[in-house]
Length: 127
Image (cartoon, rainbow, N blue to C red; front, side, top):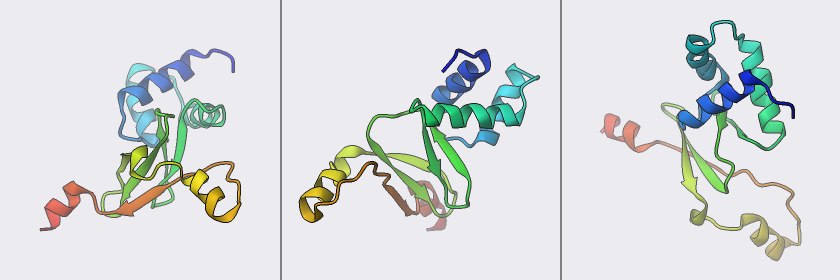
């Protein structure tokens, strides 16, 4: 992938905002620094970064797509109330693809685990 100043700024913005932002969120932050950037450019670059394994793409509950700068093994928790996405340590359920193979003989090429429920903040607000 060729270097692009816009792509570099998008990646920097993603790293500085580990809230698993949507493309719209990244765009709103970036247009303050780079007023000429378009939403289409943000979408295109985020998708290219995901396709090249530089970032992760996460589907949200409401059909939205979130982006994660961290590509180390981990899972996600998506709150059904506020739709925020949180990182979950890999150690919660290590090696699910390996366990799948051991128990069924099926070889997984990829594994995306997302937990869905109510986050601490929303649970606190509903009590």
